[in-house]
Image (cartoon, rainbow, N blue to C red; front, side, top):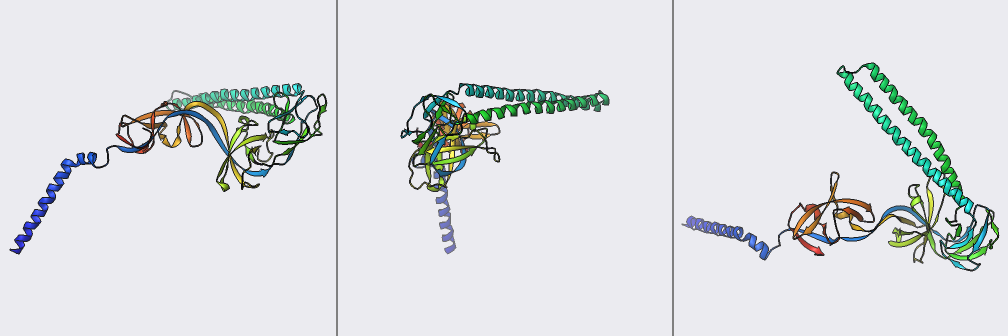
Length: 392
């Protein structure tokens, strides 16, 4: 009797559980929408906007003290105008005087044109030879394939290989001559650039640092030379950062350009100004020294600290800029997702410049699109999305 009672209770319990499960299955969809989580993949979005972006090239250097600086001109030239007096306060990049440097500037421009032409000639000839050699190599390969089936002779292969060797030897000889000429032009440009250090393209002698004029060795109508400084400037009580950059980067920089400076020891981000760019590379490192002026008094910043400098080059204005982390890639394709009418839309994009955590999009997106910035890795085209933060 007792066993029958236990069996009856167990059967009743099983029946109750079965009914409850049926109710959950039949009402599950309604409950998830009425009282549970809404449908769709949870994402964050950001409205796409047009902005300005610059390529950033980061290099490391050290903080140093900024003291007196003598301004030399490595040429004999007449002063045609004087703009400052002893005791005047000047800023980095300010014109101190104008010199009659027309002949030297003309020589420098001519040397630069000759050097650029020599570089272009070298590149053009290299491209021509590379095409010729590629064709010669293909001819050898084709003849060997024909030889395997009896459609070409060994003599034809030998002649083709000789033509290939001749083209390769001619390439080496011709390019060596062109490179020698190119290096000669480059040396001439560097020599003239040294003469024009601290002189701009209009013949103005430029202050390499901010400060006060301590002395002047020039007057209107007088001559200056390489033996005595044009001026001595007492630098303001600020610090500067010295870094070394490659020959690929240095042509993109100009005195007075703003740069971003990061001092990790102080968790500090500053804006600096290019004060000076060396025109000759270091003989050992083959790098060019660039001095960055810190235009503000920063508490805790001391000489000897390490600093990272980011140079902004190749700027694009009024262009679509998005967070780099929003971009996905597959093989050679780059794509993003945008939220549209509650669904994810797959969009292939073309990219341009990259900056600090952002990327230029040259095609695929337009201002006003709602870009998925978080959760995009879990999406497929057409998936329902649920915006949990961001605009939208």
